[in-house]
Image (cartoon, rainbow, N blue to C red; front, side):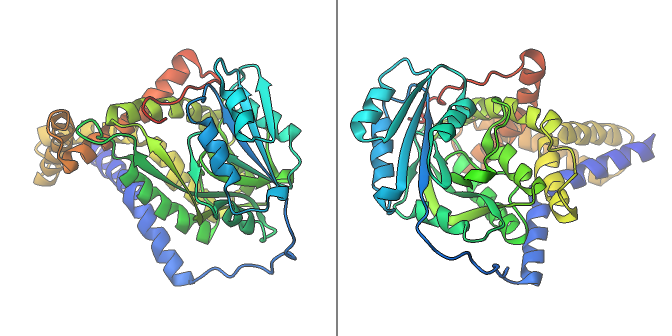
Length: 383
């Protein structure tokens, strides 16, 4: 029994450390050994038409600013088609988008973000299809950065860098998403350099028209597109110079709710959307998917195994290292609990980790218990 418990302890601890830290360090080491990736000969440069698509549900408060932001991009206006797809809006989103200068405004029945994007693609003319959230503001050269990525004929998908900023200041602004996201962007940069990214983001990304995929309406593009591009012989890349910003949920609790909703859309992709199938990955990308997606999503279960085996081994008097490990886990939980009253950043980071890890399991529970709807509402405090 003790031997089995020790195997469970070391295996779960090792997998947690690998997916949270070891994977990134391994990517950095491999990238350093291989040096800079040499791009293939670029396609002949010529003007490329782009359709920038914004799916919106009841976004009257921000849509005019978003349209103005898009029209201010440093890109030839005659080559830019701006489409706002209103997903069952019950407010003045459509009217304000037209007044702000959108080229096409689609008034659609409520079908969810993905179906609104599909409808916009069918109505579009651009060779490149770019997508943005209604509350995401792009830097002027962001679209050029995305389009330039497609000079590599192997690239089918490109996502930019999104910076999450606090929606509010003061004691209520406790979310640590910005810290996590900077780390995630560094990992994504290494993945892109070595092979392809394992996930994108909904704030700033683009595909070739012939690479666009129509997926299940509950399966968002940011997770379902990259690995499917790889399966189809394309690359999915990260373009750090294509920058955007979004407001994050002000509180850690709000971030937990947002991630819980996101994970209810993620688990269907993982379990029945094709991510688990290694076919088409190749060894390197298969290891990336396992390390940065599957193991990360399994982290709640790994933590439970680690905690349970630690308690059992301490009870058996197996050694001081297991006691230290148990005390560390209890300290992490205590710090997360204390952050509810003491706003010190180390405590807030602990609370962020505990709650966002818990959201992985909560999202799975929600999906198994009642399924996932295609519709969505903006997270509180992000507009």
